Image 1 (cartoon, rainbow, N blue to C red):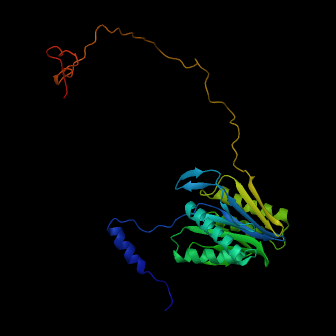
Image 2: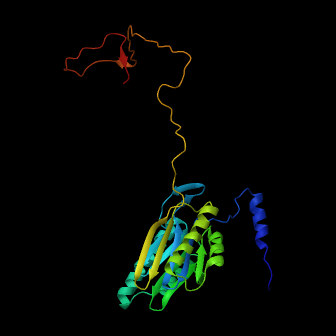
Image 3: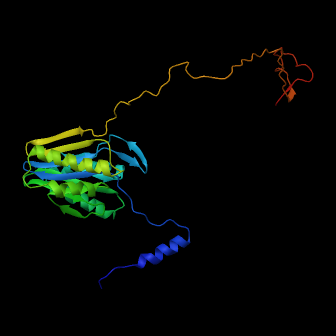
Length: 281
């Protein structure tokens, strides 16, 4: 029977009455994109890694190696994207050795979607997979639950809506290499400037039949500039009202030790301490 299901409303009301935390949506804190151009695939990503409201890394790498002709952008939990792509990269290498052929992009996509579906979204990896194989350029998105899309331009992450607005406005078939790189950079910068979870620099990866070119930090839209004024004061300019120097002279020093009587081992020649001087046993 069709329609909406509100059964979780009762559950959430019950949990709220018990002072238990309710389920919350998780922000991935990234902008990753990919698009087709006349010669292949262009992938792009920002370089900000966050821990909640804290910027943990200003220049991390989100475009991961799968094979020589396939790359994968990752959004979500950093450890999940790193190790998921590393595992699939290893499996693809074994697959290539077994078959003796260049790996296909759809093979990597199938491995990734089956692995993520197995964990029902608990592996927080939202991926943009792109590559060039015997069938031509291929571009996919893979959601954390295992669903996939094949489109001429894709975006993922918390800044994906900003990047998608740029693609829907400016993308067209048969873009040149330079036009494709420019469009990808504009899409990533849209996420950088409009999404708090995205920031820092723009990484670009161009995958063509002839090979793959990784353009690390292709653009740096957030470089620090010199401050207009120097806020350091030279030594001696801070005024004070008075100065007083006190010198203390040690007249005598007395150490009181309490406890048992002090004596050396028998035969050592150490005399018994004077009466009243004791130490702890």
